[in-house]
Image 1 (cartoon, one colour):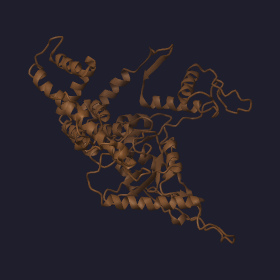
Image 2 (cartoon, one colour; image 1 turned 30 degrees about the vertical axis):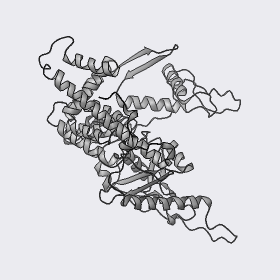
Image 3 (tube, rainbow, N blue to C red; image 1 turned 180 degrees about the vertical axis):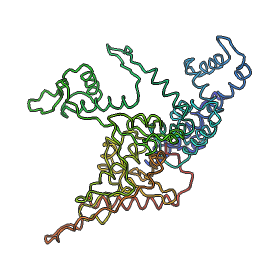
Image 4 (cartoon, rainbow, N blue to C red; image 1 turned 90 degrees about the vertical axis):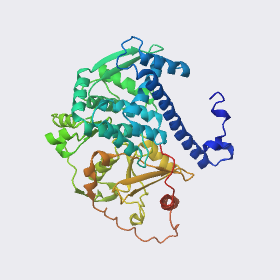
Length: 500
């Protein structure tokens, strides 16, 4: 039936170009997106087939089958044999297929429609195992599917946070029990690796892991740029130095190196801050808030339960800083620099780098003026406001600054949410994050900022000058392209390819 394979089929019949060499760069990107949606559809078909095998071979015997090699084992063995994969992998396909059929049918439809990639399906299935068999499982399925159908892009971190947010609000009691068991089961072990290396593993509360990671990063950064080690090697050496309290030094071998390193003595490392964002009621230990499952956000980890937030707030070293309802937008003496209140708000809102697919932490990243700040004429555009600031990791910030990508950000008047997009150099517009701090903390929508103060105008110039600098020309082009992209999007069809 399928012996001829996919390669013999007409690509154009599947909506793909026959010869990519004849297609523009934007067309090739479109083909890549369309093919990815097709892979999602084929994965859905594969799960449908596995679920049908379960219906025929397992379901009739499932309730009474006590054999060591039961019906599930035999069914998975068939799948493993025809796909040339291990028995464990075959059982994994069968387990996910049953979960999509019985627990997540709406999510399965999103996979069929190309709205979510197979790798994220693994995340959703694993993290919804907690609600299997509960009365609210269908509600969790419907809410996750609704989020997936929202226009926007996903990253691994945002997908995980979206699923956790929904589950924590529906079943806080089960979350609490799971967290207690997980804390009791924490441990430490090592596994051998090839070439004389080893893996070091530990399970611990998320805040402890974040603290350790921050301390490692801090120490690993105490060397100069000429150090020959990779970033991973520096962090590995820093962890060993911290654990053994032995010196950590730069290895550039330059006589003029002034990197501080570490001698292994107490008191060298700077204070490490761990950022936790939560509703005021949850932070204050409000019982009703905890019972409603209002979750919080632990930077560097993701969504945490209301009870976890209350535990962290009760720590003796915890410092609580409420976010005011009305705040200044920029520093009084510098309209380019965001105020501390605005800086905090944008990081809480964005949670991660806003570049599509990026999960880099926002608290260690940059705040970028989406429409570039005009230092010569601040009133011309690029204001320091919440709508015009977006979080980016250093890599994506530099990619935008020194490349031809164009980003845009504006307030959606219908939803009250800040919406961002990225346009490739060829003009293909990719929606920004579909999930951010507004989903976790709806109260953010009530926070407002004053307009930034305007800097005094420059004195008149008497010598001949350009009308504007080359940099200003580049910024003007980007403003024009943003406007053009918005107009084009307003008239675009609703069947845009999914933005994975």
